[in-house]
Image 1 (cartoon, helix red, strand yellow):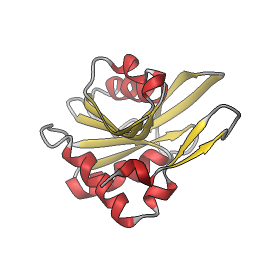
Image 2: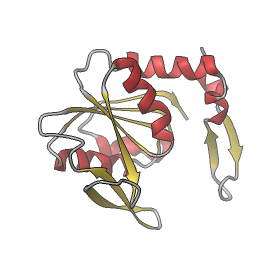
Image 3: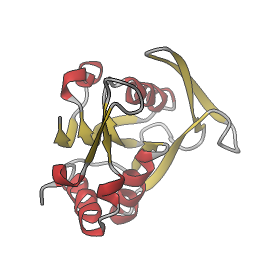
Image 4: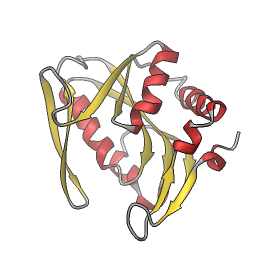
Length: 170
């Protein structure tokens, strides 16, 4: 299946000069959505992991179904103030300012093997922050997967030490 054909590209959104990759058209097609989840699972079949971690919101769309189908634990990474228990907070740099992500402190334990999943690899900033959070909790990142990679933004450079798999590249 050609997943690229299922992505709607919207020019100049959210600001002038941005070519936005809209995944809502892919997830609206049940067959394409299911296929993308299966393919993301397949590319990591050779890895041993017990937890899938994904950031809100669109990372949840791929990470959670993958966790269900592989019978692995799912750990959500949320924006500040969204998790009800004790959290590890991590502040990271954005292009214009900073943001804070949080994870429950007891969600990842020393020795856990973690697969990070998100919808899009752009600059790599968000996923780099998640890698650091996993490491601080004692987990080991064994792979990182994305539906889409914007290769021209060189996000892989921040993640050189990790295996990265993507299904669609622009």
